[in-house]
Length: 232
Image (tube, rainbow, N blue to C red; front, side, top):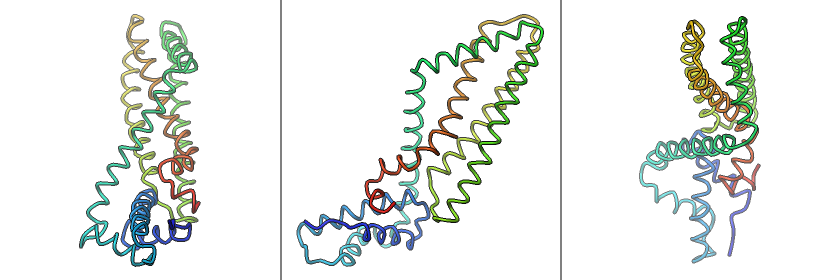
């Protein structure tokens, strides 16, 4: 049976772009869907041309083309990527290294009972926030460069920046609560433990969002979209 070639996959991607599908990962998903439909047509009729088979598949989307399905698939992809983030986070939550990190956090927050506690805590906050700003700027620069070269706008990349805003907001609330804790007269061991766990979780989300996902972008596209391996 005839199979879709790499050249034809690229034509499918170009076809989706011409029909106002702006996100590259969504283009890949629709191209994969179209490719499967075209190959099914070739199973029953190998003489049908690629262009005719493509038009037959496109007609199945109705008079509005891809417009009705784009928002639904975008939401589905966001959910898919969020599930991936949670899966990665759970795998890290169960590691010994994360346990050590949490224990270190508990030790840090218990420094509140000592003379230089405020300096230690505030230094940690400044360091984390500085790292956050640095990584955000680097990701923005890298994304703009990639967009200018390959013209590939990704839902995955936008989700990364969306999560960065969430992390920033969560950390601001965390910092506000921490200032209250610092000014308590008595050492609150339970609160220290709670704050260390929250900080560790925020830091893990920061790592997965800012380092793991951007570095694994190609692998994620390969895993989610088999057709991508033919054209990358």
